[in-house]
Amino acid sequence: MKLKVILIAGGLASLAAVGAYAVSPDVRQGVKAGEAAITLAGHRHGWGHGGHRGGMAKRLCSDARGEHVEAAITFAETFMAFTPEQRAAWDRLTGAVRAGNDKVGATCAETEALRAEKTMPAKLALAEAATKTAAAVLSDVRPAFDAWYATLSDEQRQALDDLVKQRHRGRRG
Image (cartoon, rainbow, N blue to C red; front, top):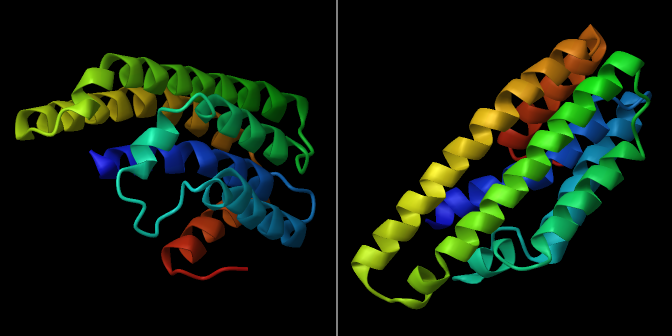
């Protein structure tokens, strides 16, 4: 359950970093913006890793979840210089992310009683709900992301791909 919740939260927070980095007119500024977006939208608000036992689900299911998503999107947009085609694709992508946020909220509401239970069947039911929600969110966000990615220039795509490679190696800019 915890892993799926982290994946959803990380995906929403990372959207801002992806956008800020990939379409920034200055790649160096985009790197800094991407890193800052992750910090702003995630770790600063306690959504990072670091042993927050049980806290992730509480934060993800809090009323502030939507505020974090909006803050991440707004932050990313402050660094973007969109072409009209990129703007249209970005709007579809952020729409899918916002809809995903709503799906997460609905799952949180549906599983509230389960989160209070301390039984193994309840934990498995939570894991199942989180997995289904994550799959549903990704099935909407992924095509919108792919369409947006297709509007990026070769340089923007390379910058975005390099960001992913660097993040997986644990480097920070």
